[in-house]
Image (cartoon, rainbow, N blue to C red):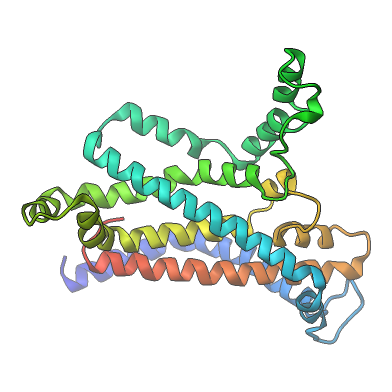
Length: 295
């Protein structure tokens, strides 16, 4: 498309997206701005009219902050790495054996249609010490009592949280990788095979550099989501320490209005980390597009 034609197309797209983007900016941007004012104590709710960073300072110096951010990073990084590792194997297998298998693609899409909240509640009902599985095994004499069931919910290692996130995010990463692998074609891999390259060498030197930007972008998006997600750690996580989103919610819903600005400050810290992650993912996406990879 010529220069003027491209500019006209971009202008038309801007006109079409303008109303929706305006509403989004007013709602979310206005909410963030209002939250920033409250976190800085510039709010009529608390009666404070002077700007201060005391609430951010209180959050950063709180003894619970280190444990909370460590738990949040553990959940986000572990679930992202596990989902990415499984997705790489799954995407390579599907691309090699059944790239156009509609049934397999349909099965892979099922986790995407189920909300995280529904899965978390299902895990709570099925796997808790008083859940369906524990009562089933106890009823048939497989264990002495429901309390003897292994602790998979509200445990120290966040097993149920990780399982929920991994199960949900595998299809997302897999589809992003499949879109790249379908455009890759077998030619480069066949050239590597003619040069006596092993499967591992072909993956390391041919496939991985090509899918790397898309994989990195997908992982950053998944990390951003899991880092800021609230409902799954709230339902399936332990009571102490809690993840940053849960800590923010508890402070914001505290009956003491003076604790609310600290909850908002935690939320803004989460938003800043997510913004950095999403920005990096967009950089990787643009890099992939410049290399001719369609995501």
